[in-house]
Length: 320
Ligand code: FUB
Image (cartoon, rainbow, N blue to C red; front, side):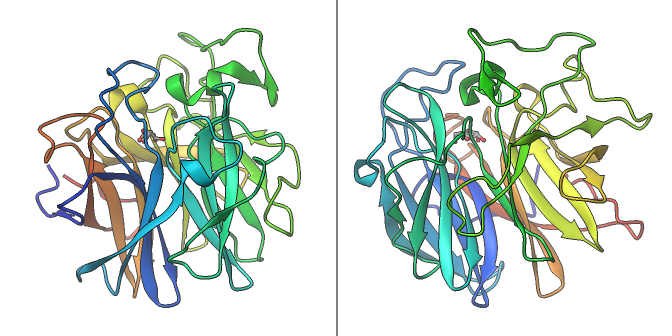
């Protein structure tokens, strides 16, 4: 699949792209996969990344510039292990990177690091965001200047350990006809360094208006939140994890609920799938990853980009 996609960083393993248009260029903020020798398991211990690079492009069809390492685990005061999928937002000329990382008790928290330029370097804050948990932060700057973070991921992403923003004594994954666990959304504080409110669970509904169930594993949320707007509508897209789809749901406000709409990208080679959707000069692009260049090793993924198109009614065409 995705024959029309091209690989962006053929000489290294990069995954989980977040992509934004800053200062007229596209900036890519990926995870940096590496061969750590840690055996593969359902908790994702094999995803043992310890730094981030930033890449930029003058256009999605042009060459890619590597700006080098911009943040290392070793520079983060509260670090335990595993720098997973990050995202960056710009406010008033500063660039804020949000990154999930396990603390020294092996619990994922979300940290913030600040840069003067989109290409970094990013200087980490001394502590993670108060009340943060789980993984895969994705940022939306809304048209009114508010910033929202979407986050959460199942299994190794630890979302099943929480209800109502409180840690459970032991993890509970909904089953069967129970509503699936939703991602979280939260408005950021004016200084971009904390949550401005308690995170809310995002509802993803089926065509009849009922929450997607845990058994509906080819459509329910698993991880890899992304939010973009098209013609004024909010498009929340995500990975279904163990069924390996990237799909989307739409709504009329940043908190949802969002109604399931369809498949953007069917399963790629490799266990994980993860993406970003961005507009560049009137055309739309899907950045994502697969594990073809590493011969299918799930922990060694490669960045790709493909054009994304809409039907006239606003539906996203599945990329085949
Ligand atoms: O890269 C580690 C994890 O794999 C990400 O946080 C998930 O979204 C999945 O892509």
